[in-house]
Image 1 (tube, rainbow, N blue to C red):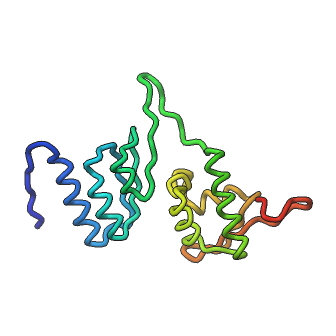
Image 2: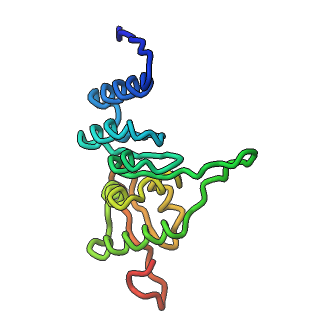
Image 3: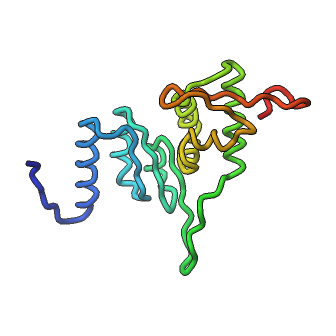
Length: 173
């Protein structure tokens, strides 16, 4: 049985959240943490988790410089106007362009890449959350058959560039 402690006072919810997150991480229950907050006080938690090997994705209404600096990736959420409906996630052309340029460069050296390697490259360049919002890497690339091909299943799935159409410059998806 896990003892339950009641904390009262400022930051008591943040303290409990940090204790639970560290406990769950140390038990191997997750490898990616999502912090949806603009509270710079959670920067210490983000730093600990990231230094321990977790991917830390931050989401907030405003950019907290302290929290942003400690996250693997930080996404600013637009504030919703009163009475307006949230808009569905839509592909962002500038992010798709960055993904295309990154993968053309990676695939120039290799004909195929494992999706796990692609995911790591996307994370390094701050694009992993965008691809996840689009349904995950496999879904994202499978919907773009004009640019990419996926072969295989699970962790062994391989990504390659689609065959170039006649007249297309090499390296342009």
